[in-house]
Length: 162
Image 1 (cartoon, rainbow, N blue to C red):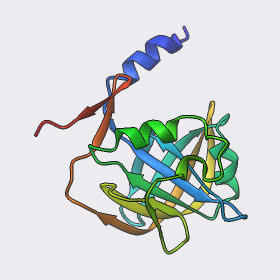
Image 2: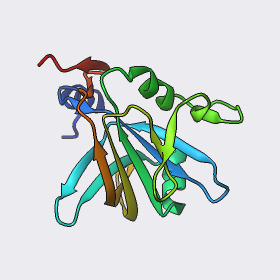
Image 3: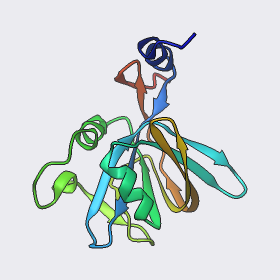
């Protein structure tokens, strides 16, 4: 018996997750980014992470061509950034990045200002998994701050109480 997709979504919504912005820079030097909550660590040695990207998202093909991607783990006050990068990219010159502060990592990817933590990852491979691609990356640089994380729970944003 197949599990009803709505029920599965409701069950998965009970799992609180952090919120990240995944970024890439294309061959033309244009920055692209999207909100990703399906992100986790895989290994400490070597340092590996994964991000799951819907096959219909623009980022799916961009990641396939990218050598590196950036991860900015959002802090509790960055809900507006999460929402901005979750929406379709605006048709403006700077796209989602217009007016958003960021710095360039060693690999050239955008790392968002005031994020709780940053990672630069060398893209290793993609595994197909249903309607998503699971992108595996080796973390080459990582930094962190002391703020609290932005959380996503049951379809909305939350903050830690402790």
